Structure formats: C-alpha cells, structure tokens
Length: 226
Image 1 (tube, helix red, strand yellow):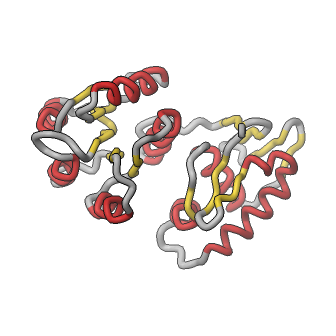
Image 2: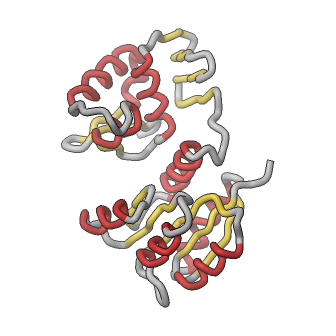
Image 3: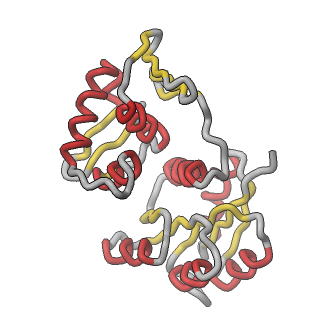
C-alpha cells in the first residue's frame, strides 16, 4: 500500500523538520512548504495529498487565506497550527472548516496521534482491528475487550467510548467533543451522560481505569503513562 501523503506548511524550517521527522517515523510521506503561496502551488499540483498541517502566521499568504481557498474546492482534512491560543482564533478556524486546531508549543507525538485519528475518520488509513493500550486490548471486529487475561463486558457505548479514548491517547478531550464523536453530532444530551459512562467504564476496567484521567472543568484524557 502506498504511503499516505501529508503537506506540512510552516515558515519556520525547524518546525517543519520536527513535524516531518515524527511523521516519517510513522511511515507517512511528507511534502513541505515555507509559505502560503508555495502551499497552494503544491496542493494544486499534487492530487495525492491526504491531509494538510497548516501554520497561520506566514508570509505571502497566511494560513486563514490558504484554508479559505482550499475549502472552495476541497474537503481535505486540515490541522491548523498557531502560536496563539485564543478562543476567537479557534472558532474562526472551525468556521472555515478546519478539522483540528493545535496551539504551539505542542507535543509532536500528540500531533501525529491527531493526524492518525483524522485519517482513520476519513478512511485514508485503515483502522486497526486489534489495538493495545497498556494492559487493555481491544478487538474491534469481535467487540471484545480484555484487561490482562480477563475479559471485560462493556455496553456498546462504553466500548465506543473506550475506543475513542485509545484512538486519542494523550489528547485532552472536552466533554462536548466526546459527545460529538461517541454520541454523534445530533445528540442533545449533557455532560452527565459522559461522566456516568466514564465512571462505569473505569469500574469495569479495574486498575486500568486509572488510564482515564479527569481534566477538571474540561473533560478527560486517556494516558497509559504518567
């Protein structure tokens, strides 16, 4: 199978190299652009690009305008990078159809995890049938979860919730985001639904339930170490 191609756009060569090295390590094919104009040239020239990692503050054409132009003709997944962490910027990004929004500085491992999650959702890379996270093993085809050698019986939503946590290891997930992805965008529930399911899931996972960390005032993060 051909490698999945990703375009990394950032005017800082050091940042491009950092992101490129981590993506190549995960077997992605990486193209680079140092400004918005070059990014658009590459995007129009290469039809095999599956995802774009796009900085906002760039010379010639900024990230917002690059995103705006690409969205006129394409739904290709876009992850925006920015030195800013303001909510207004994030909202503008989502209004333009950005798939993820990551503020610098960030962990390259987390960025790669988000790239993988987005590509799985858009069916650009295969979703592994069996995944391992610490002592937890999930067989998605058989809808089976084991902790160590013990089988754990989970409800459908508990299984989906655990799968979403494992898929986004190390990423802080808001309750709203969890609702949107596990219960779907048309679910009109509240955060207590998630808290109740997380509590049940933790209990069923025993000591491994400690992988699910609570981020007070926001949501949860699944982390095997730390």
